[in-house]
Length: 136
Image 1 (cartoon, rainbow, N blue to C red):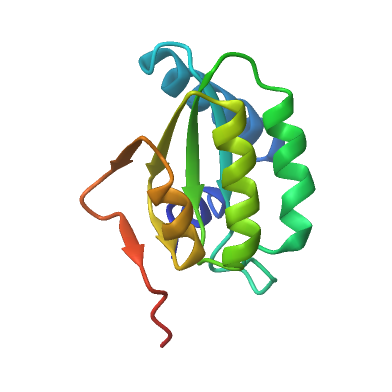
Image 2: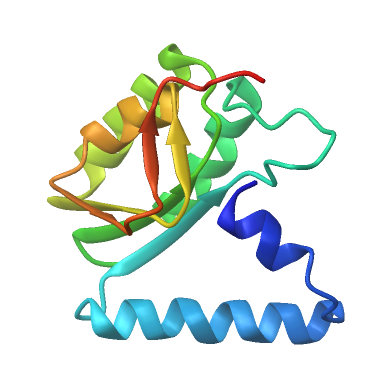
């Protein structure tokens, strides 16, 4: 189970969860020198399509077009998905930002690992994981 799934499964009411998320993202941005921040996280334990696919391309590109500055931190948690779509997303990110850091709180597997490797800096905790998605 991913870090974000655990976080979303807590018994917060939605407004409290949104306020806490914004507070934590602000803390990360401040600690990283005010860099733009983008969260791209899948609810990995949910019974839903969560792999990176064509439907993710436009929303991500819209989000990065609204960010200011030339440095970005991307918080990424994903089981993977389409390498071709990730390649296209990364191309847009690299063309838009001079410095790209990837923050991996949990898992960035498969195509997520490809995305992480396109960063200039990779920030992980001891329990974070990259690589091939292992099926049970």
